Length: 406
Image (cartoon, rainbow, N blue to C red; front, side, top):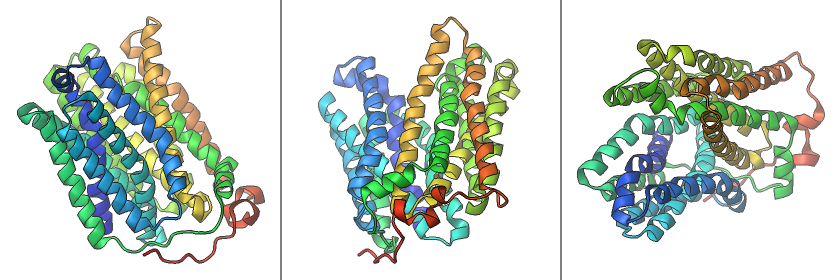
């Protein structure tokens, strides 16, 4: 039951992030600011997610997971409610920063709770379901949030988000079990655990793969209109198809046992690279453009939970939360780099159709890293002591039995 509650919480937190994009013109008008100033709400939100996640995870590493998860959802609900009540840019900015901090900490804590709540063989599926809330938010939360905002005002959208987060909080308080919290090891040991070569390879896959993905997704709507010739209505339908692809990719990721992640990971990364290389041609044929968008979403949302689960299992127990937060932060950096990469292609005088081909370059590099990771993690590959968390008590601290949190 807790996994379904985590999906609800994830959906609420993700919807709080995504809906702002569709509400920017209304917010700018109501608060008497420019659209560019309203857009800074998105930029600052992502900055807090990127920087605040690891910091908040380290500061709260010794707190009981159940209580921390409840507190995170309380902040999410309160921030959404404050957004609904905001009548000035400053108040809305403060509310959005609160939502961003809640999201940054939520993904790390929820991933830990999900993995602890199920048997080892089902841990990938559990983490994938947490990220599944984000996939559902792209299909349901974003378009419905925009419709509610158009019909009843943008504040009404945040009332709905606050209600969803409140339901998630209630579910956590009722059904979340007591999760053991690792109290051994210092921050320095956790950081050293994160600096192992294998962990850095995993993080680099997230960075490279999502940089390429975001470079294309940032400009997917104008690509569909200009290159494919879709009408605005068909662009919306295509984005729903993309959302369905993210759900499918998330479900596929959940079927991969943790022990097989390194072996399976090269496939979705390579699929992402191939679809980007072909996207320039696919965009010129409407059915193929739609199919390519579905595959794009599926491949990207298969990579993210696989890397997240692998990283959390690769580090020492006390560093699992930091690994989860670091991966989310790297994803935020990739988002900024990807948007900049797509913009650089256009600034260089190339057309929209060139963005996928350029974006494929970092994804191809990610595929190479994933293949190397698979080779190193294969049963026949010798394990170096310095890169194995199970045998590095000097670096990470010897895991000991953890007291159950209360």
